[in-house]
Length: 166
Length: 205
Image (tube, rainbow over all chains, first blue to last red; front, side, top):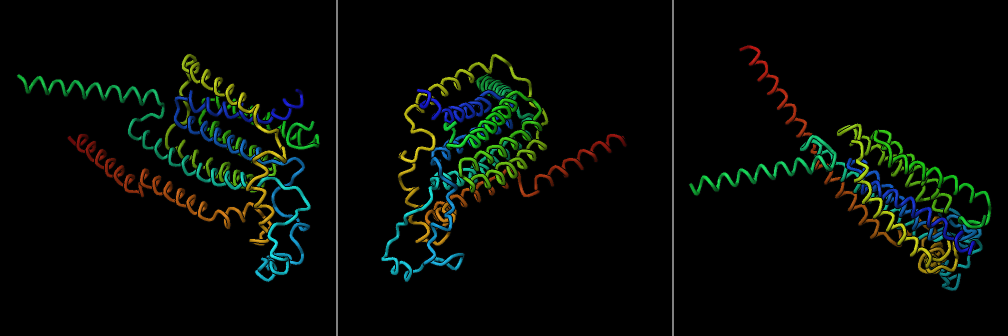
């Protein structure tokens, strides 16, 4: 039971951080604070995925010299060509001497981080435009101004109809 | 303390320290009102999570998070803050109740779901026995690049990376179109000069 809990304590901590980010994104009326909460949420989700790819006793997925066979040369000139594969009997599947963590979540989260900053800057540009149009970046004040404008437009439309019928 | 990621006590202690810093920073962001402090703390959050990425072996993600998350997005947030406002309005306590309940419910559901997940660092978990490990085995013979993450990103998933580049390009284009290429500031200058000249006329009259 203790083992079970300890194995998952990392997940629960990450879930806690995730929920703080989500809470900021939900509750803050200030739009910039909202986006900061969103980026915290996103960073923590990346952490969750990367920690799923962790292997106990593993190292970063950069092949150590023992796993880059000398018969294929060393260094940059080492890209094994067709000859090398023939020499190895066409065998493409290496037996590794070290344990490596799973590289696939790392690749996917790299993409997610870069796309995340792109969407963040797009959102911030929208906020700058909102500030220019409304003079505020608090969501409830923006809503209030919208409501006033809509009411004024409705009144004007009703007046127009009255004048037309009169 | 085998629990957090490795068999050694040292890394586990590092993880706990990083976690504590992350929690403090996140709660500070939730409570603070000064936007400058919030933006700076979001940069701190990114740096500390970059350190955590390195602790879970994701060195490439750690570099990217430090450069993009802590560097670039902090700069972008700072610029947006300077163009808009410096402080947030104080929160209304009753309005925070709904979000708090929702987040609590989501946390409970996620923790309930995490019971079915394999333990942290389990080498036999489905995530660690599939395609990712095949890349590690095949990589050197296919590409000759020792860094598996780089070769997967550029060689095996080149089209994926190209799509990502397109997304970043479109986002940059959209930001440029929203903020303008300088013509808006020109309009503002015109308006200001008009206002000034109008005032000048009033003053003359």
